[in-house]
Image 1 (spheres, rainbow, N blue to C red):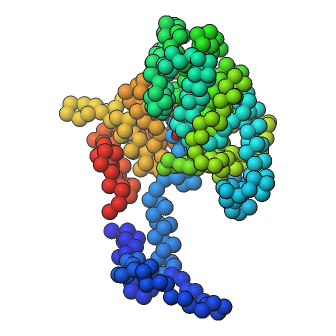
Image 2 (cartoon, rainbow, N blue to C red):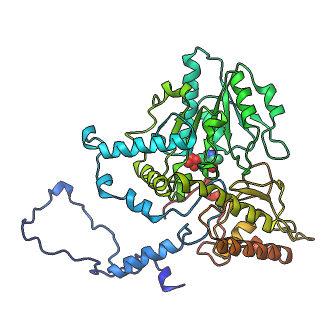
Image 3 (tube, rainbow, N blue to C red):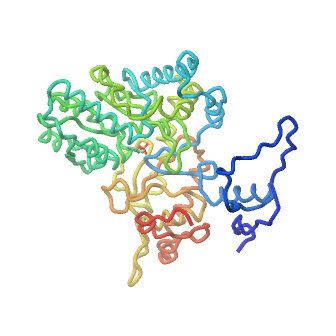
Amino acid sequence: MKYYDKLIFELSRSGRTGYSLPKAALVSEAPLPANLLRESALELPEVSEVDVVRHYTNLSQMNFGVDTGFYPLGSCTMKYNPKINEEIAAHPLFTGLHPLQPAETVKGAQEVIDTLDSCLAAITGFEHFTFLPCAGAHGELTGLMLMREYHAARGDAARTKVIVPDSAHGTNPASAAVCGLEIVVVKSRPDGLVDVEDLKPLLGPDIAGIMMTNPNTLGLFEREIRQIADLVHECGGLLYYDGANMNPLLGKVRPGDMGFDILHLNLHKTFSTPHGGGGPGSGPVGVAKSVLPYLGIPQTSGFHGNFGVMMRALAYILTLGRENIKMAGPLAVLGANYIKESLKDVYKLPIASVCKHEFVYDGLVNDGAREGVPGATTLDVAKRLLDYGFHAPTIYFPLLFHQALMIEPTETESKETLDAFIEVMHHIAQEAADDPEMLHSAPHNTPIRRPDETTAARNPIVKA
Ligand SMILES: *Cc1c(COP(=O)(O)O)cnc(C)c1O
């Protein structure tokens, strides 16, 4: 055990402090009322400033973050976010605002919201946005409620079903279910795209709409989107665009031009906000003209949404500008295809076509399985990556492949970083072939080894 592995309570010495305050000169001491005083002493560690600093710095280094290493997490766009966005979002003139301030005193904040609205409208080809939803899933629910309102206002109450591709992110069917809609699954073809022939018989007067991600969760652009849009509109339904994968399309293609009616964007993914551990997020919902009258009806959160995330998004968009924002997509696409091609001899590539910003392997070509020793799995590869200082990719999603390993390099990584990752992935494939047992027990040099994830999820112990 290292000295630094000690708990901060074990470092505590009675009377030691980490701060000193000057004696109050201008005000006299006023005793607290007796009923507010505690009966027993508060148990806090008594340590010096240096102990506190080391405690928190060491804790921060037990974790993995995009500031410490490469984060190839597919479907989540964990890009490096320029620090200037953090500085702008933390500007005291904005963070000091109170949500109940009179409107005429917060004109600057209103301008931020309006400018972001028009930037996003230009980028997506939609009319207007609401910034109330605080995450992608929250945006999906809001968007589906708008879809329901749209049909209800036309007296079209029979539309109770929503079509979702089998490659969809789990939040899509979950949001539809929460909204009280029935889910109908449309299959993907072997090439990973929505099967239009499977879609046709599903369409009818009971369909509220379809939810699609484009590029989809396999990183493939749905080429038949215009035909799909026409078919869904002809049957009276609307098209919902899950904008979590907007990163490779920025400035190149607009969902509004593809025929979508409602969309959400994940500002924390595409437009720069560090969002590990579930937050903070912002999932603004945009609408086409036909749905505009219903925008803003569902008051899904208080005040104006997650303003800090919106500040970062606006700073990101304005820093890059109309021309440079177009570079994010091609660089992300180049990085993803570079990794995909470099490792396809050792990791199974079920869909070989050119991908957008992310792609999926289906486990190892040679997993090392032999008599009495099971082969190395995708989980083993992901855990072993941690030993080499890389965050694991998304695994076992999408559900189309049993050993799915989904990689998204993002545009902010250098070729040198991609090469280092490729080298380690090759090395792990060799380790799997030679000694799968060693991989089963990875990671070997992280502060926490391999927790029982099922028990951790079902019976979480979040405090000692
Ligand atoms: C991340 C993601 C979502 C959900 O967004 P949250 O902000 O995490 O709620 C939905 N769809 C896709 C494709 C995603 O990648």
